[in-house]
Image (tube, rainbow, N blue to C red; front, side, top):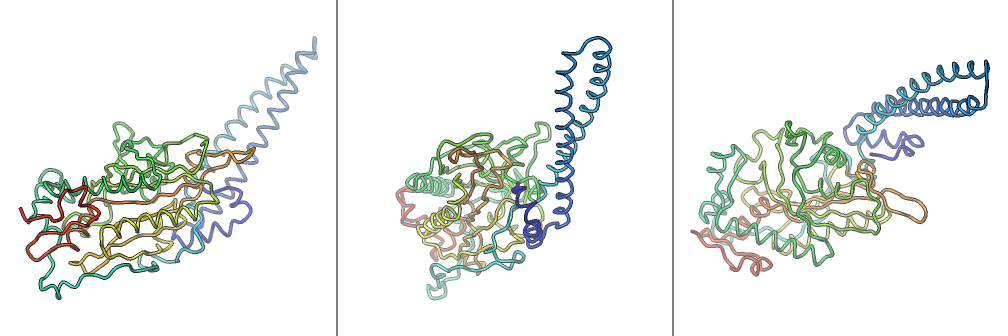
Length: 420
């Protein structure tokens, strides 16, 4: 959640942030009114409680008729204190509910606009000229069949659309990607983590995934639990309600992720680009707010290093304001070149969430004599299915074999995937 001090001192900044995100601006004024009502309710309650405390001392010292009168007054005051306390609780709940509807204050450097209004920051590598190589590239589904690496037909039979099996070299390729990612992250100072993928409502809400992103979340009604769409959620909640003794803390979480893909009917129905279940290695950082911008650039560089190691052409984009998640003030995506689509497709992203998630999750650090909220950042090091798509399509040969990137060869044990 945002800092209420900013809302009170500069509400126009909050209104502008909501506007460029395409979110409700009216909720800002509603929150201002509810915040004022909460402060009035708190003041009223505390004044009555202070009066009650003074009266209690007077009762103890009084005698006779005076004491009887004071006791009657104390009884009436007790009722008024309870009523004021109930009014305070209602006012606080209403203000808190409105506060959860306000998204993080967007960076002024983020491009303004919708999904297509991103800014390309750089291109790295040159897409391969398959015509010069003398053959038409096959897509990852066809290559997956030739290599016996991907089985979407049996995936659909068992689990419905957007489901798949990774088999043989497909499964081995996942293990190689994960091992390389974890090895790289460990060398960069990250602590490897295998987190739970079932989380409770406070963890999901605290990271901002029960607002605009709720439609894509799987909920287990019988248990009031959620399946995570990214290990960002359990990693962020790992230090919930804690004061961290040292910063920065860097974690690399490997987990299965679950997404409904609501609102994507008809999009990417072929293959494994957009699926309901996939594995991913996610980087997550807790740091002091003053270091957040620098940490964001580090996350982007680690992601670029990974794509460079996979020897895949890509571009880096600055995501536009209307396409940001509720928690992020700025997000960079890396999009890999997919030859059969003649397009760049997102394979990793990294977001700076400043103190937004930490306020919701109550994660702080000690700065001299005070405690303050930490900043949180996240970045995908590798999302397995899309990286497999990029590797298969970019490194294929005319016979359906696929050259293995040099960085993966020690983990995969071969330098080429051959037709089965």
